[in-house]
Image (cartoon, rainbow, N blue to C red; front, side, top):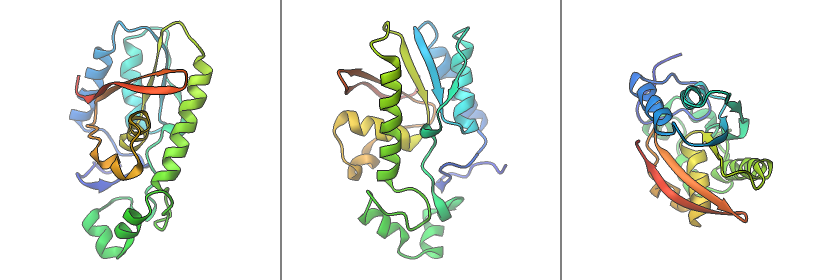
Length: 191
């Protein structure tokens, strides 16, 4: 695997965590120590699985479960390219994507609408599985776009406003669901 480059569209491919990314994951695990957790669900990508394992290390008896629908957005032919490289190689792609966030798949990947439907369906399945629960939390370890999908839905934001949601790597967001409605209790920040 090649090391990650800043500003590159990686999406759903494997990219190794940097030493800083590994440390951020360890800090998140430590920040969640002591909380009552029902389960830890992770994207299948190694960078998310590492974070899930850091959280599980602080919660003996919990083993992270893989949830494929938490994977990052599929970027198609943009994978490994920067926005400037996409503009040169595929003129008009970024503009077409921006004009149809809901449905444009011209790059051979997912649209933001596809991703939103996938992530929110997974959320609904996980909440139904959890039922009323005993107050123990569900931890989802994922990526930028799935996290934006969950936050935007809880905040009532459309696809055109997703870019406004700053989700740093290694950050935490806390959402609470009551009677099917989400409420953001904490926006992403580093622990």
